[in-house]
Length: 265
Image (cartoon, rainbow, N blue to C red; front, side):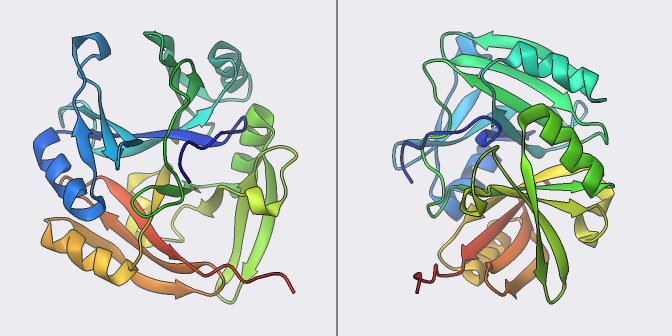
C-alpha cells in the first residue's frame, strides 16, 4: 500500500538506531532494496530509508555505548503532549518530551508500564510511512511483554486499542486493532516475553515485521549479508511463513510472507 492513511494508535513510523550507518544501509539495501536519504544538520543527521521513492523507515547513528542497536515503533497521535500526559497517568514513563521536527511533525518517546520503549508521531507535513504491507515494508508490529493483559489495558487507555484472542494449534495469540476497527484492521500482536526464547534477553520490546516474497530466501540473504537468523522460518497456518532475524549489529526484526487471502464465500 502506497501513501497509506493512519488511524489514531496505529504504527505510522519506525526507525533504526545503529552504530554503523554505512554498514546498516548496505545490509538493508541488499535485503529490502532500501536506499538512504541522508539527513542534514537541521534534522540532527536523522536520515530516511526509501523504497521505490517512498519512506520505509527512519535511521540514525547511535553509538553502542549510548544504546543497543534496535528498531523502534511509533504510533499515530493527534496530540503528542496529551499522549505524554496519559502515558504518565497510566504508569509509563516519558523518555523524551514531545519535540517538533521542523514542520514535518512532532515526536516523543516513552516506555510502557512494563518498560517497553515506543514512540508517537504527530504528523505535520510528513504523514508518516509512505509504504506499508508491500515487500520490503512494515506490515505488523509485535510487543513482547511480561504481562499481556496489563499491556493490553495500558494501550487501551492510551490509544483505545481493542484486543482479540486468536487460537492456533500452538497456543493463543492476542491481536490488537484501533478503536472501532474490525478484525481486518488489526496491525499488531502481544506476546508473553519468553514465549520466543530468542528475544527474551532483550526484555520488553516491540518487534517490527516486514513483508517479503520468500521468507526462506530472505533469511538466507540476511545471513549472507552478515546478519543472523534467530528464529528459523516456520509456517503458521492462516498467517504465513515467518522468521526472526537480526542485522549485522544486532538490531532485531522479523519477516513474513503473508498467507494468501482467501476470498469470501
